[in-house]
Length: 59
Image 1 (cartoon, rainbow, N blue to C red):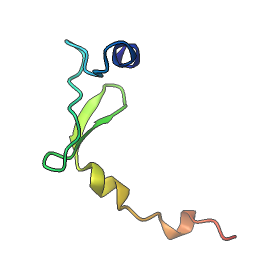
Image 2 (image 1 turned 90 degrees about the vertical axis):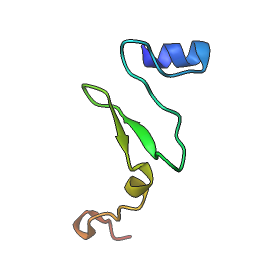
Image 3 (image 1 turned 120 degrees about the vertical axis):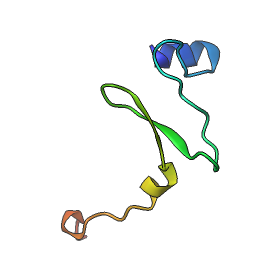
Image 4 (image 1 turned 180 degrees about the horizontal axis):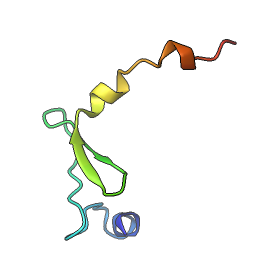
């Protein structure tokens, strides 16, 4: 699996399964862990999404 390959080699990409690219500011790629696995762009955009006000908890 990806996780055992990463633990053993330090490289999460598994030939024939998925090429998990290293993140950098230029490509901004990330691995979306779904079935099937997907490589997407725009990781930093995900970090800037504000939660829907209806989902916020009032403390």
